[in-house]
Image 1 (cartoon, rainbow, N blue to C red):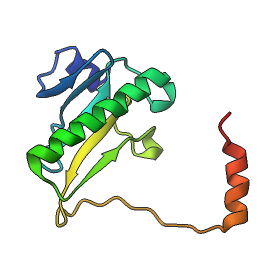
Image 2: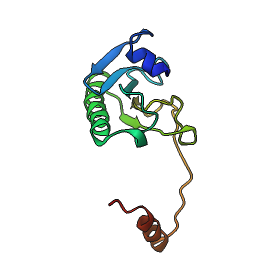
Image 3: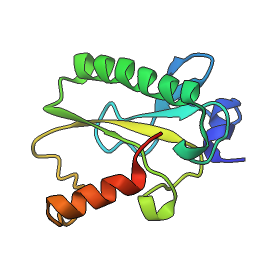
Image 4: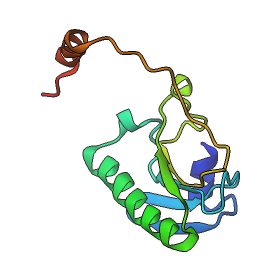
Length: 133
């Protein structure tokens, strides 16, 4: 059982902001900036890859609603919506979730990666490998 499962079950105190059939959203205990919210699937799927279309849609619907509320309440310069899968993908809790993170120009929060520009032909070859059916 993950820490998020325990929060959703009420075994760990939380500050909820949203709940529906599929989603439970609560303030992140490690606030990067005031208004940082975790949007978690109630069912304990480990990653987005293990969700149904309905569950994935519910996560992002909730994230949008919460982002609108965070934007209105905190008036940040921007918002980062982050969803990570598996440790190499920056996931720290093995329970599918998103972060709704209000951002400010001088908040010193970083998220970056080196850009590689393989060219259009290589991009087309990569696209062929992952064409969605």
